Image (cartoon, rainbow, N blue to C red; front, side, top):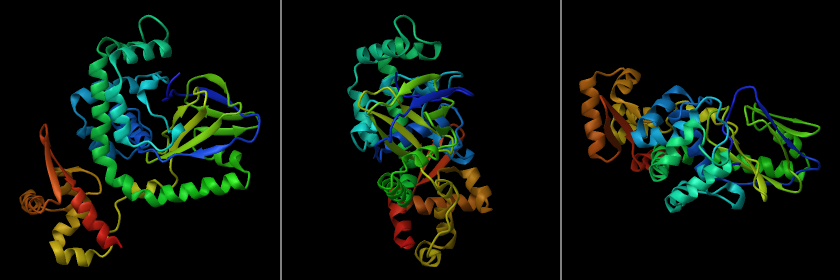
Length: 333
């Protein structure tokens, strides 16, 4: 029951008796969840450390508390409330997922925990959610929102990768080779004569029957995988979109001379360096610039509404604004 997250050296089997029908969903809510699991809950799935730190720092204490069960050792099963809107019915935005969580009543969450883990006391990692369901729902919805606010520019830049994946899946389906595609979705999936074997998932056997398989590519670490195997309408598999590694690397800024002419060479380099939120100390090290000089340039960029500054503990985090993303996109064309 529910979305499966992970456990080491355990296999789940999805038996496939005939050529499966494939469907597709572009659902960024699953990307937000994958990054919550990796960067906030602490279950490493291949997200680069710089991004893990940047994302984890943007989530407040209530969000960290809510997602802690997703990183608990040995825990692979989560309640359906983790993904109230699945990709089965189409594309799901982060905002739609957050709205569904806000609409979910505490009583519904408690019933969901009972369906997932059986009557009585849930596993230790989920007891806080059972005891204070309203707090858990608010914290989890907040964590998804805070993560999405950090990674949305990266998701927008991933659009060509997603479009290419839509085409790849479509061609594969038409040519009758879904088995090859399914076996290559992730290093944690093996396709054999009986169907799919999924490593680091909850041990169990599931029968696909006449259900379709909905594929939902994510912008996530190479080992990220989120599954829905129990829905009577369809099976869904969220997996890392091929080529995502190229987005973790700092891009070469196209038309940098033109951008430099507009905002100055140091500030142009600074904006390009902020491919992910960074602390002032990280920026100073990356750009090899004195802290006093960096502060001056950041003040000018902030005045132009091109960056934001946010203090978290002893660190000040710098991030590009949507206005800056649009500016960079203009010079990338």
